[in-house]
Image (tube, rainbow, N blue to C red; front, side, top):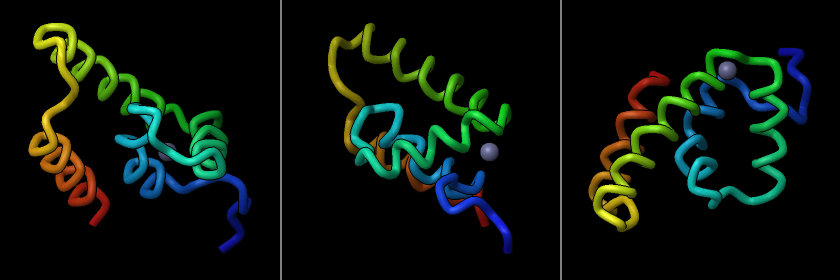
Length: 82
Ligand SMILES: [Zn+2]
């Protein structure tokens, strides 16, 4: 395949979106993910909708996303790709 080495695919982007939205993604992956977001409106919208929901939850509970929910969300995102 002839994909640019710096940018991620949609699948990779969705896999890393949770970490990215929470600022836990390492710099190199973050750059690759952002390189993809520049080209892909679908992933931008996905990130946007993801970001909005937990923000509301966080504001309401004044806490971080419970690990169980984060894990469940992660699993749901992984299932999306297959
Ligand atoms: Zn994409």
